[in-house]
Length: 565
Image (cartoon, rainbow, N blue to C red; front, side, top):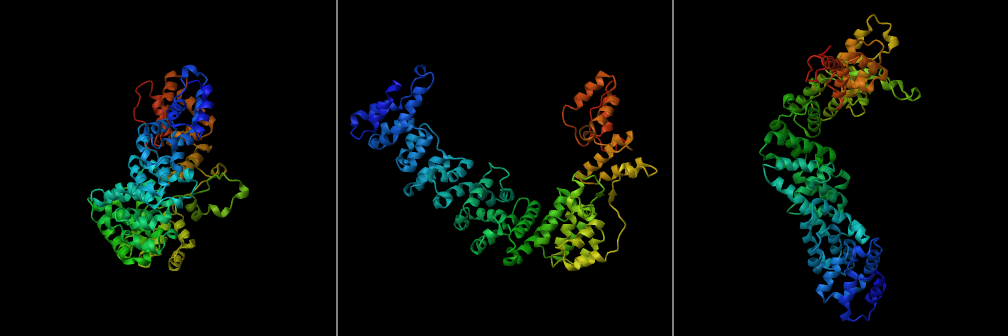
């Protein structure tokens, strides 16, 4: 077809007096693509597409009684054109056979069909053809297709989408073998993994709070919705009616009958502790239920035994915080308090160089109890304050634990505004202990006044092994820049620190001394630095590997920070 005749065909398509006998020819002329061999620049095809788009609204109504011609127009239309006609009612669910003959169902098409009340049921049936991501897009594109707010989305469509997203989670909750995984997936459904159905389900619920009550009372997936609301919705968004619907699942009764009773008990304590902090009204509405669930979880899961915690100190702190929130057994609370006192205390490092200008520096920020918060080392003291705030916790257990804390932790508790008055007074009544667990970093000028500056640097290196990672890095940087460092001290530092964070002249001089005039040693250095150095690799072990290149190369590149000293 000559593209230059498209204006004529467009005019014919738009004429009301066009005879039905001419309709097949007009549609054939407008729907047939222009061959590329006659349209190298593509201008003819663009002209045809423009004429087709202008003619489509006039041609579609005339093909109601001609299924073949109607299918030809649909096949030649773009997805956007089909969606626009579906939204206007020109294309209906009766045309699905022609639409799906060459295309898969897509979210915008379902949204367009669902805008018409008599097509909502058929539109929801099409949801089975979509993935979880596309199910969310059905609701997300509502405003773009219909220029309307989310409140106008038909309720059956929202419920059908939530039902399909919640079905896998509901199946997990119904089986003892998978209920633990189901609860964990619901708790983790916060958007961290955008492709998972639990994340998408919460985003759908979060965008449509006006449907929460009807969804929570659904007999099929209402249990999953209640769990989702308790885990992720804020307390202000759950009114009394919603909260009353969610109360039966607030204590996670599903976790009492699982194939992994110990793990399930620990997860149950974690979940009810989180929910009680998220919704404090639970402690008023069902206190006995939560207290009993917490006591049973501690008895069955044994989370207060240090050796039973797979995630170490952070797991113990979370357990104590959960028990402080929902626990009511004095014996268990006393055991948790005793466990806190046994945890390793923080290492407070004072005198580290500051990166902020002196004009902005507050001298009080370098006090040990404030350094705890700056380096996130106040977690144990914070947990003790929370467990002391529980009225069921024996005060004697708290006062005994205070004597085992770091002096900076005791000061932090005494000054914390959330500390109960009796606990603050007990902390203030403790005698001032010697400064243990505090490392004071000195400048080179101050080190000059000491008889053995190198031994002081060595004491810092030994103390850094008990410090947190950020304090560990700061100590390494200070030692590396000190004029009093010795070769023995350098060997104990992390090779990554020496080569990447130290002064370039220092690293260059050290490498010159290690490699010298040996080409094989420089080649070995290149091989070792092909990938980033691990923190466990000391500078001493790195130089040993280089120096042994000429004889017998070593294969193990890991050692403890002090093993090469």
